[in-house]
Length: 236
Figure 1 (tube, rainbow, N blue to C red):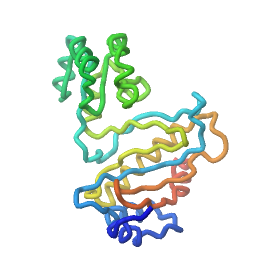
Figure 2: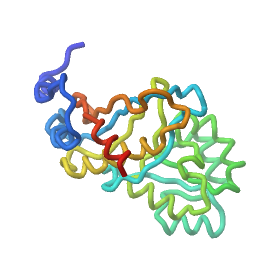
Figure 3: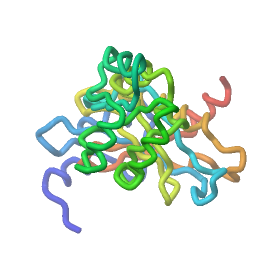
């Protein structure tokens, strides 16, 4: 596969044989962006788990200190006071039967997250075929099935990131924009890594966190030396 000149120039700034300290990697990553627009910055963490086993599924959500730089569109399935609380918290769409019907009939998924109160999950369950493949179904494990809808909406709007391990044992998540600069990206990346370390399944054997890399949406990957972060985390 041949890459364009901009990608090759960006790649030339990265030593592929080196694992960079997190601070260095986060300062370098904005310099490797290829596009003219403000590229997102993603983190990829390879874990020593087998997600085919339910007891090794790593899934959760984290509120990044500096958000993701992306405006989140949040819809809420709730009634009465809970619906009013969701609107007051800034939800983009709130409803019950009529909202579920719109999603069902029109396959409407023009949003980033859905929050639902527990009593609405029977209704929301009908949307599995539409929302499931897009990863939009509310889930109590990531805090999107809750009676505290206002808190969930505020956190999602502030840049809460939901994540789950993929088949190959990799967790990928957005940790900001190239324009954030090194310090904000470092704090967001550290928060993400520490969250994954906290979620280590008791059944995971051998090395849990195997590799970490960060990159802009279209730029080259930068390997991160994550071992000092593990040592620091375990010492807390």
